[in-house]
Length: 255
Image (cartoon, rainbow, N blue to C red):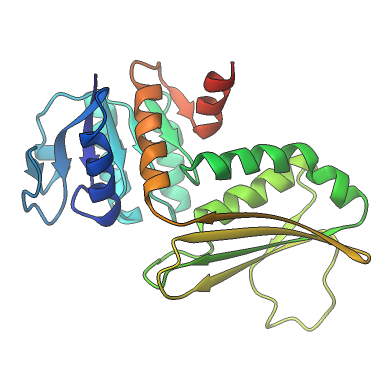
């Protein structure tokens, strides 16, 4: 049984994960953390993570970027592995997470869904073929109108996968409005669309001479991310210190 602390338990993702875990015989949520510490479920809820004294195997974090530093400090002090699903993190927070991974197991991924992570593997393996043949690369991501960060963590994750395949030859471009010139082949454009209730939509476009190849992933509900987070919790329980991501989960499952 994997005992989980849910950081951000009263948020949308916290609620979805709570529902998923309630139907899972191999996991349970033993405590929740939320600034809105209303008790909605059958586990205790703390408004401040430092007040949580409940024993657990792992912490799942779906909060805001500003809350992650305190989570990391708690994870290290309690030696509880952390699954960080929050995106839009600052460079300083990312460095803090990297440093923490020297003392405790940390799981961080730009996206928790199986489909996106398989797409990432494909892009790492085959992007060089299209890019080397002269294809330009663009990424378009779409999300709901409540999403704060742009571009999405998933868009950056997919861009990094493409770039890894081409020996980091690409420069990311987020806005062309101030420059009136034709694009360079070594540019990777990333565009963000915000509107309505779009859960998550990502297109990686390879545009060549007289042909276009597109890779697309569409999320129709938040449940796919919740399932991935619970899968990550089961994976990271008992792991030694280090940085892990969904690629490690896939490797273990495919071994």
